[in-house]
Length: 233
Ligand code: GLN
Image (cartoon, rainbow, N blue to C red; front, top):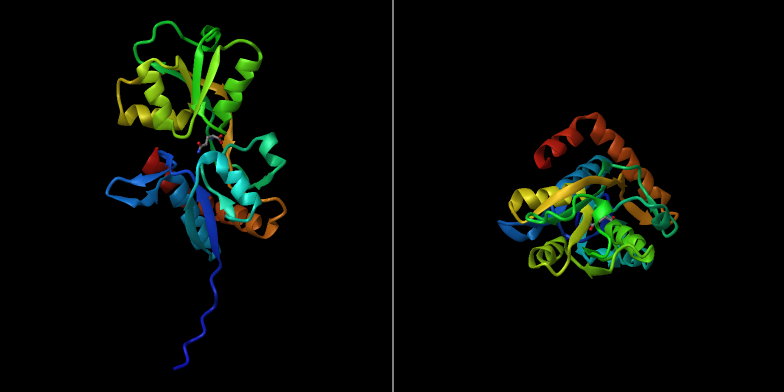
């Protein structure tokens, strides 16, 4: 029997590192499901623009190489727009402000700001903007050592155990961790760098980039964006 011919809906493969609440993380009721601010936002944009999404989990530092090799079509992973990354990918318009914060163990009385980190050990997520900032402090001879780990939860464990003295991580994510796990860490500087997140596509993929930007404008205009904001923040 002949099947009905339907218009093909484009399916884009979206790379993410889903251990980054409240942006992308496993649903505690169904660990196969990724939820979060970024997830709702890209789903709303996909619906608006008429495409479908297939998720691919990768470590954060594997996302840009996967985009460049064509393994994925876009990155939706709380990725900060930086000049350095602009050389290897194209970013959408910024979709949220999220800068860097400095956090220490809840009982640390020694480090009260970035001025107090001399000779200390940093722990950061590998390949992140927090890692770039820590690398800067290390190359300036200010800090002693930088520990790089894959996920934010591992980073906090190193603060908790005393292996590292401080962490540099995106403010909304550190804040979210503190709400979920009170009494482990505290933020001592909530604005060591101001940044914004963008969706990334392969250099020159203007067709997809235009859809992401047009969809973002539409979901901001129709109230969907604010609804998603209210759900996660
Ligand atoms: N926003 C940070 C960066 O882009 C960290 C993102 C993440 O770990 N998902 O480097």
